[in-house]
Image (cartoon, rainbow, N blue to C red):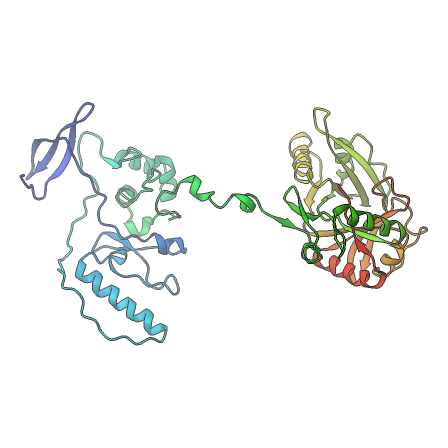
Amino acid sequence: FPVYRGAQVCNSNGGKELESISIIVNGKSEKIQTDCLAMSGGWNPTVHLTCHMNSRPTWRADIQAFVPTEGAVPGMSTAGACRGTFSTHGCLTEGAAAAREVLAALGKKVSDTALPQAEDAPYNLAPLWAVAGKGRAWLDFQNDVCVKDVKQAAVENFRSVEHMKRYTTQGMATDQGKNSNVAALAVLADATGRGIPQTGTTTFRPPYSPVAIAAMGAGAQGKGFAPQRFTTSHRASVAAGAPMIEAGLWYRPSYFPKPGEKTWRQSCDREVNHVRNAVGICDVSTLGKIDIQGPDAAALLDFVYINTFSTLKVGRVRYGLMLREDGTVLDDGTCARLGATRFVMTTTTAAAGTVMRHLEFVAQCLRPEWQVAMTSTTEQWAQFAVAGPKSRELLNGLLDAPIDNDNWPFMACGEVSVLGVGGGFFASRFPENMPMRSLSLRAMGRHCFASWSRGLRGLGAVPTVWRR
């Protein structure tokens, strides 16, 4: 096979397949019959790992390539081809030196080891970023980006490498520019009258090699399919031997068995009797909680519920039935008015996310002129319901100020202090068929559960389960 030194490929010929190429050698054009043409983007150090750590590479003119910036990533050492040393002898020498540095940093002493004999061939080249000619000069072989495309980007003031990349799709194919980015940066630098260091590089992002989407989701199966959500009382419920059930993404106790109870019905009967004769609590933190504030908060509630909330007095709670835009029932729950422009909405566990999205849709798309903001506080506020003849006795042992029927009538709500920490109190009834009133207390996460644990020890209350 003939060897042409200093020749440049200036054209390719053929229809459905390559038939020949044209080269320029010693100033003359020559055609060579061939069905194969190999292309290269040059020898470029693999700087991706250091750049993934937010380091920017440094341009080395002697090898016409970017190399990792020394010391840019604490604790990371580079050696060999990834730092611009392309000879086998140089790679072995640098690798051994880097290994000794790491071992010394770990307090290990090692003796010098004879390295294999290898050629230390000099690396000397002249840059050739593009070949001038009448036809197209390809840069990105996968995305068909030409030299003229990069120059056109510069003409239209896409001078930043990030802008040029998106304007031309340079480096956006499966090789992510490994075969062409440096040449494209050089063409852009020449078109804008800058040097390659001043032109810079695009941002390197993982992965380095293509990864199948299925591999990224490999862990999303079984319990890893979706996030597991736990209440603040979860560990205590598990420690008490309560079987857990899935309520959407939440885990809630089904019942609390005692020694000697062989069936779930025995445990449930005991819990029911205890609640009706003494007191019981239920962790209802899984219920959706949405804090709604703004001058148009009441108007928003009137819009989404079938009943009116703008007439609700401050410090009162009202049940509501929410409809979708097509009139279908979406959810039911309560709304407590804590101020003239502030409401706290509760939703069912399953519909918490759906209701939040619906409220945002109404506020952003149907009534964008309204001044109203909403925030989901489901995970920020723990909430416990308490019922039974001794419910007020239990609560008064936790609250800094006592409650009674006069200052907290049915369907009242307001702010309270729970062992020195602010919380909320709602005097609603749920389930409706219970002969006594049920009360609901919310406070910040773990503090709320710690408060209940302290109060339960004094009254012998039992944990129980209500479905919602």
